[in-house]
Length: 525
Image 1 (cartoon, rainbow, N blue to C red):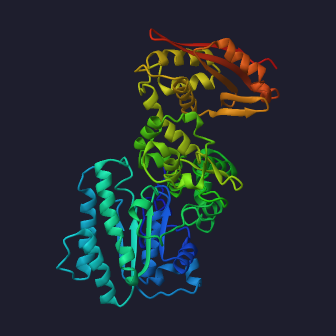
Image 2 (cartoon, rainbow, N blue to C red; image 1 turned 45 degrees about the vertical axis):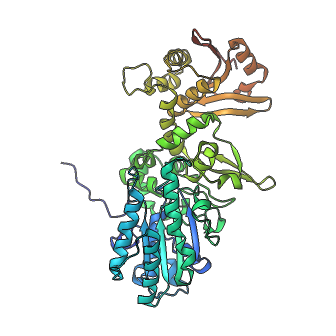
């Protein structure tokens, strides 16, 4: 009988309480330097980070500090700094803990949270409005303790994130939140510190228009590492876990770290700084000893995928899009600013910054996000099936590419296109489907890849094969192939040991029929 192993309490998966992590003996990646810096430098703060990135744990850490629990910070950086450990009253609101499909959901969660705090301070006669009750609560907490009040709001945007800007429910919730948060200005003399976190900034102007002192630190380089982990932090805190994962995978530690980097690293929220890992996914990978897209198991981006489709942006052109700072912090959930919303929610990150043009180039942060998002996009463009016997099953396309069978791949693609519902299809629709299929097949895929003489439409690579695609619409296969040759798209692979296939494709469509025409040629070396 195999020996059973009891895992050490190392990985605080899903634990967002600082006291629970410390008292439970879990590993804590020390972020208390940033907590101390924040409390010394700011009074009203807003921080945007993707979900499952450590925002709730950050607020819990701040809450614990203001509770005066110095004993829990023993050995951490903040203990060595000159801090005031005098307890302060804390009003902590978690707007993430609710299903917002019901119309009255926002009122219910605010009402419950207020009731809990009102009981602490013995408020029995309360105002009839949510805003009035919050105002009375702040004043009562100050008067009863003699200390200014700390206000923490987790995931302030959750009630509105999946709503359209012009919907009746969006406007109603916006009004309720604006009235609620207006107390941060009117009660200023009673407030020590206030911090709000969220995924998106989309409602900042409309909700906080009266609170012009709110300091949005989301893209400040000095707070880049306040949530998420640097590679050094991951390695130094979880060295044993990385070693165990490497042994399970039959790799060296360096190879395993490279794959962790490929899957979970890459987030950048400022002009410069260290790129960050998604803590949730790393913890899940180390605990399960499997590298998989865990972030998407904890919440699906269906609403965002639908917005991408509705916006008309081509999925194969998302990587490499450039936006100004003003664009990145644009307000609204409408489809017009879909790239801003994707950046704010963590599906895109900063690839580079051009200070002369004040322009950020965006990309998917890592393989986990790129493949996961494609998984939710593909069904919006093409019929999806999990039937292993179906010719449209993803594994069939994957086998075609990895086995060097481009003819079978294109024939399968031709059959799929004929089965597409609807009539309004463009070249970009067919390109998007091909791109998503190649991406989900696990190939290294790039769209509009630059060369010295132009840009190829798409290239997909496996360990043994390279596929160069050029697409045309209602033109000819010959024109597509001629472009590959005349602009020497394959020239970069002249010394590559892999087999290179050149694929010219033409999407021919009329009122009566739609047809994928193609020709495949092997590159002569």
